[in-house]
Image (tube, rainbow, N blue to C red; front, top):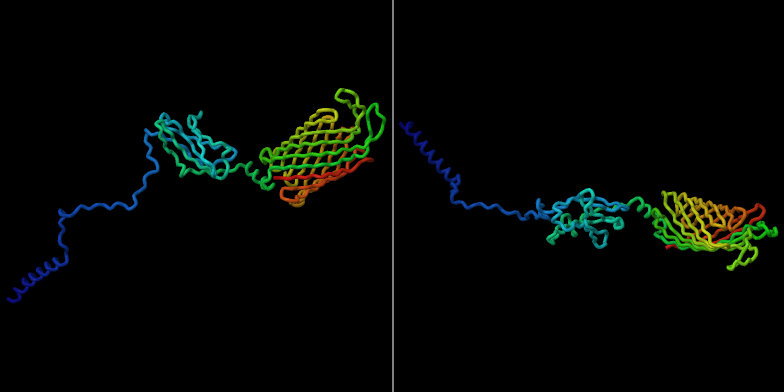
Amino acid sequence: MLRKTTAPIALVLLSQASVVWAEEVLPAPVDLSAAAPVTAAKPSNPPAAADSPVATPDNPTLQHAPAAIANTGDDFVIHAALTHPEQVRAAILSYRVADEPAKDVMFQRSSADDYVAVVPEADLRGETLQYWITLQLVNGSKVAVYDSERNPHTVQIVPSSTDLNERALLARVDGRRNVFAAMGEYVDFGHSDVTASGTTPSTIRDWYYRVEASYTYRPLRLISEFSLRVGMVRGESPVPYAATDSAGNSLGIRKDVGLNYAAPTVRFRLSDIVYADGTLLTSVTEIGFSTGVGGALLLGDPYGTKLTLGFEDIQVFGRRFYARTDIAVHPRVRLSPIIEVTDMPHANKYGVRLLGEATVKVAPGMRVGLRGGYQARKFYSGGASFGALFAYEL
């Protein structure tokens, strides 16, 4: 009997213990109907608003492909498409270079049915170009359609080969574009025979002297240099002439000659090592007004070692052909052997001149030189020549 009543009692005790354990361990049920509503937390940094309002079909817009580079030597051109042009009074491209004040150019309708704004090549100086675009509406308001003055679009300015060459040559001459020069020389051909009808056969001293001053400016581009030379020549010629005064009265047979001249010259850059000179001469000789031309071809470094082949032809007074080699033996010293064939001044035979010239840079931008040599029209009679020159660059 005791064994039969023990099991039910144990089951009752075990079930009561489970209830007690459940009440102590499990949390009390939550009443959802009484709970407060949950509110989502706002982010501490809300996203920034857009720089410009979103375009709509009713708002005018201007679309273009932003440029990355601008080439010097060419205009900077921007093509754009404009919507609702009936609402736009003007489309304005504003730009600035370096620290210069900003400038404005208007977009114009092109033949390709788009709109074009042009920045002139003359303004493409420095390293960068900055621009932004604004629309001025018919209602008087302005709309920034691409960047702004505070945050402009930047374009890299790429120099052309001509600009790079100019910079290199300007560095070669230490940034000195202006050259003032003067020179003088005495030339003696010895004795020459007088040849003229009605004159007594004789010989005279065949000589002349020349003084000259010049100014040169160096653009260092397609036109590398242009210069103006003025000078005078005085001497005696082996070809006598019948001189008359202003009234036409005869002054007899004269052998003295003279020349006053002005010669503008332009030097063109054909390649890095090939240059060409063109010269026009206007002059007054012992006989009257005369003109002339000249030219030269330069091969090599224009401000270093080079070969020059040239000529000059002046009416009545004569002509000369020459070859000159400039050799830069030192950054300060240049030696120049010269060969010249000439019938100046107003001679009846060509003579040959063999010359040497040496110039020395004595101070920044200042160069002095000496020249000397020998010349003759006949193998058995000749004479010496000597001269000096001075040049100052700034």
